[in-house]
Amino acid sequence: MNETTYSVNKMRGMSVIEQGDRQKRIGKVRSFVFHPSKRLVVGFTVKRPDVAWMFHRSDLFVAFDAFECHDGKLYVSDDQATTGKAACKRLGISWDDCILWQGLPLMTDDGVVVGRVGDVTFDATTGQVVSLSVDQGATRNALLGTSHLDASQILGFKLGVGDNLDLSDEGEFVQGALIVADDAVNVERLGGLAEKAGAASAVASYKVSEAVDAAKPKVSEAADAAKTAVGVAKDRAETAWKNRPDKDEATERASVAMEEGAYKLGKQMSRARGMFSGFKENYRQALEEETNDKQ
Image (cartoon, rainbow, N blue to C red; front, top):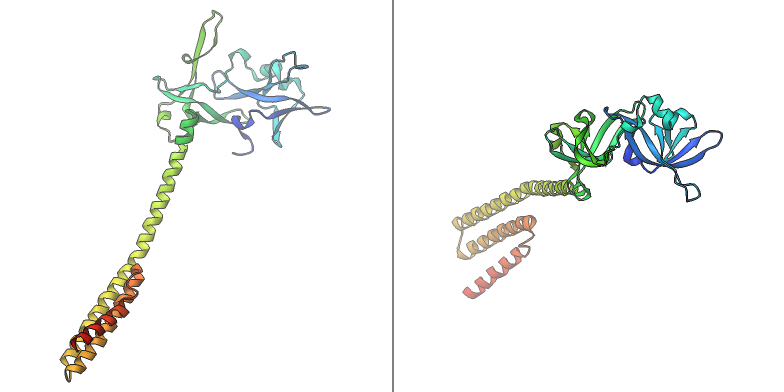
């Protein structure tokens, strides 16, 4: 967010300081107030402490354009036109017609419930709503994440649908909801545990795949080398057999050729799979035992 864009959730609960001849803490931000027919923040209410812990004081309304935010606190001037009825008159709004969006149900014109109003971001220079997050309950939010609606997807407040909001003059509850565009139903949810788990799984799968791909050339290279070693040993054995001057010399040459080929085969296989490290020695011992048995 830029310097003029604020989140109502982050601002809620902030200390409010009145600036004048001396700074005075007047309370904490309680709720944000919205225009009855526009996507517009008109201000916020400040919960003031009771007098002597006994006499209740009503909340104070502060206009959206009458504060500065720094050091985690909101600072308002002591000008009368920045708060209360004077601020409402200056902004051209009726306090009784204004709306609190916090927790309102979000519905389409067809009555499909999307969720409830979560966080709202707005431009402090104009009061215009920038975006709205859809709250579907703490569990679903944590698991599936949160979806965000652009201001253009917020169509306005509607009476006669949604939740019971307040008692009317006749003693009956008034219903109300915030109407959103039909495509708000399909807005992607982001940041949930399921998404993070899926991302972690995808990363792990990618790493495994990457490792397998990296190992393939080495295994293939080792297999090719092993085949070559066996071929060389076979060729040398055949050559030794054909060129034998006599039986004893031919046997010796064949033994040397097979031993050399077996060693190379065992060496390549041990690189690929970590096995057959004693292949050469075992083969040599077996060959000697076979020779001794024949003698």
